[in-house]
Length: 127
Image (cartoon, rainbow, N blue to C red):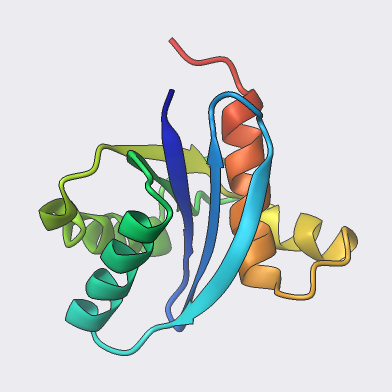
């Protein structure tokens, strides 16, 4: 059973949540304030080890039409920098996760958005 670390990657912050395939429920962790690429990757790697995750889930910021725009390209470039962690990577549409986190009353919107992203992924059918 895979245990995922979900990342809601923004330009200034990265929301983080964790959950596994068995439960379908994610736990928001915290929001990482971005500093430098190497520091961000190191912090994610440390958290991945601490939480004993076996895969990463990254929210893909699609446009309202479902296309990839400039923000999706930036997130894909950031995801490439996570390769040294040696964890498999999954992508999932992250549209409206921050709005949903706000509606649900999340105190940390970025971590809440990551939790919603992960729960949606865990509940979606995969091939």
